[in-house]
Length: 153
Image 1 (cartoon, rainbow, N blue to C red):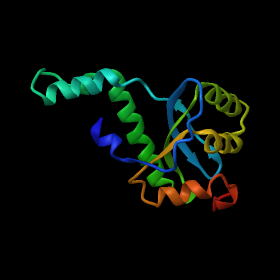
Image 2: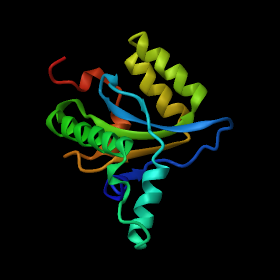
Image 3: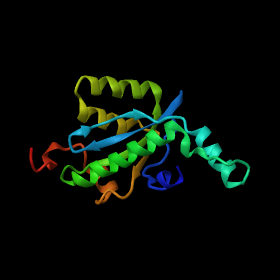
Image 4: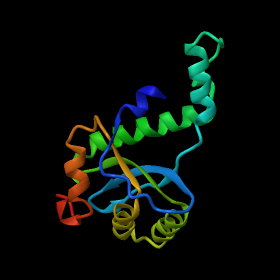
C-alpha cells in the first residue's frame, strides 16, 4: 500500500464540503471519465502492515483481497495511461460527497463522460493525480476534457 499511495500527489486544496464523503478513483482522458470506482476500505490492511512493521505480527496486509485488487487496478490503469498517452489520460483519486458521486455515476450511465469529468473537477473536495504515467499528469488534468486533443478523433 505504501508504494501505491506515494504515487499520488495532492493537486488542489480541500474544499471542505459537508455530508458523507468517500474516495473514488479511475481514469480520465480527453473524452472525459473512463472509469469511476469507489475505493475499498483498506484500514485493516494498513493496520496489519503497521503491526508487521512493529514486529507484532507475522503477517501484513499484503494478503488482504481488497488491497490486492486495488493495487492491481491501479497498476493496470497506470499501464493503460502510459500506452495511450495521445489522449492525455490520468489516473485520479478524488474525495467527494457520496451524493455527488451518485450523480457522477448517473452521468456515466447516460454516456455523459465529459460532463462527468467536469462534475468531478468542480465538486471534488480533494484531487490526487498518480505519478509515473509518462507525461505531466497535472498538465493533462488541466487540459481535459477536450476531445479535440485526440489525434485520432
